[in-house]
Image (cartoon, rainbow, N blue to C red; front, side, top):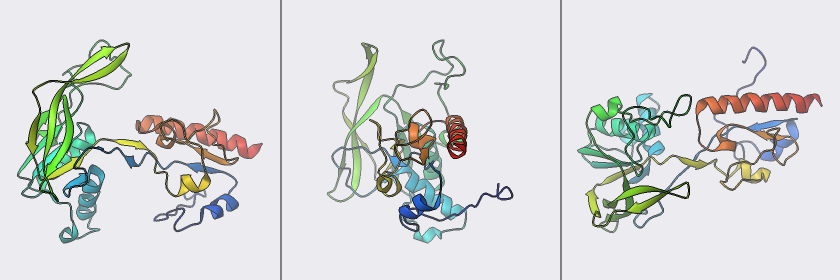
Length: 270
């Protein structure tokens, strides 16, 4: 790509290291492909307690240590000797489980609000749709407890640090074509924990900085709104990938990027 003329600048925060107006003035077309980086949070009582972390903060710190970019002694998010609760049953949650075990956590529990997936594809979930089957990773095989149909109600603590999560079982029913979650009476309980990792996915792109300063229009889910040509309301600003769709699959991002490139090429020619 560099031989073809692409100039790659790393460690650059537009809006901080480069003024957004300079980008607008110096380029004929701009494509925003910053992904969906705003993590989903649990807005419940006790969320302010110490010991509750976003999964990516936990995983990124360990990656920097493993890469030799950061000394282990400076890591403030360590699972060693702790009762770790991972909230979220996806791939990121699995990574949290494995990393916590490798850091010698006392024990690890993973909970998911959705039902336990089947072992094999169901007739209503054919290829090429995303495979909704139970995934057991090597992280899980190293040792953790897993629970499904669990809703987190609040975090409990000693006034400063988290000491547990109050949860309850839920059931899912279909009503007017929509899934409805209903609590199961008499199932409330406390899962003891002194470290919580939130692996709940991402909601929309980070709005502060670039998107806000460009004044781009957002859709109802706070993703960047584009038209059929992948263009925003700004005359020469385009957007692609998770920035437009919200968190999705890599293949979708690739397809979106190709489409945006084609439309930018058309825009420049015209």
